[in-house]
Length: 374
Ligand SMILES: Cc1cc2nc3c(=O)[nH]c(=O)nc-3n(C[C@H](O)[C@H](O)[C@H](O)COP(=O)(O)OP(=O)(O)OC[C@H]3O[C@@H](n4cnc5c(N)ncnc54)[C@H](O)[C@@H]3O)c2cc1C
Image (tube, rainbow, N blue to C red; front, side):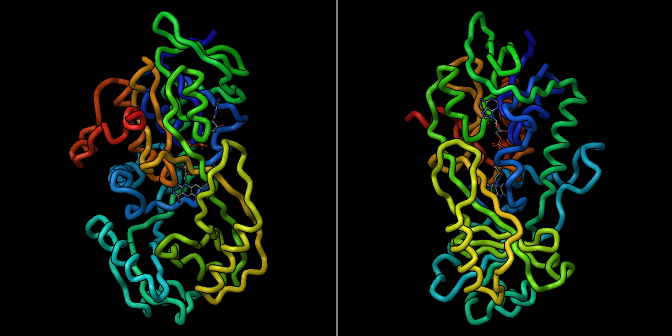
């Protein structure tokens, strides 16, 4: 029977970032049900770092994550974690209220309104008859998700951490101040458990005798299609996102990645795309651009997991001792992962919120699982 200080359930980006943050001070096991980490939502993202996206709390912890991505510790990765992309928020006629809301909600200095001509110069496939107004965030970046995820895992192992794959947790119990996890790969014991099980987080809570927090996995579809422009021209375009997020598209290795930005509630599962979502997205993009989407190379879907306020659930369970939450990162889990790892590590070590995040005026109660029970 393997014995640890902390067992983290789920080796997606959230579990990996917590493991990376905790391994220097604790003996950590990262317990993953699949044969490789990142098989579920983490391996299926659109890889955009965007400080002007999501509720205020998300924007704050995204800003707090930027220094890590820009200056990771030596040896973390061989390639830059961020590369310039830019994000255009595009609006058809009649969407003025959404444009004004976009401007009002943006953190100062992130998003500006630009002229239609400028927007089309940045993203030439936009249809000038369709486009009415555009906002631009020059600071939006592409993330190298694989490098980030592998960097966490490599650093965690270098600090003495243990990754267990093919080790789905099927039951757990606590006795004498320690958890025993029954996994498909054997038994794991630990003083603390961190629940980073993505779409399955409420199921893990039930195993632990904790109250569920109401995680709703929501399917999001993506696909890549061929565009007529040469790859080096496509590579220069920003991400273009419809102002009410009814679709977006962005360059992806010489092709164009698109999404209907769907949020269809789903049970926890290996999510698959629905043909209707792909077709409707292609039609919306064709309305707003000069694209004729004929050749779709690849399609997929993943589960973005939310609670009602769209903020993550991080920290100790209010009722069950030694059980910590790292769940509900929604559509922001990659770009917030450096901050989330540090926040969860602070809760496990009982050192509180990291100073830089506290200085932003963030209150730990905003993450608390207890807010889901009132
Ligand atoms: C189409 C799409 C686009 C996106 N775009 C972006 C973007 O541009 N930027 C961004 O920041 N985010 C984006 N996201 C969101 C981001 O991908 C997620 O927030 C993030 O990957 C969630 O990570 P996670 O570790 O919580 O979940 P997961 O990656 O799903 O990891 C959870 C892990 O827990 C494991 N597990 C579950 N149950 C058990 C058990 N019983 N025992 C052991 N292991 C278990 C699972 O096997 C899984 O590996 C996007 C998501 C999608 C689908």
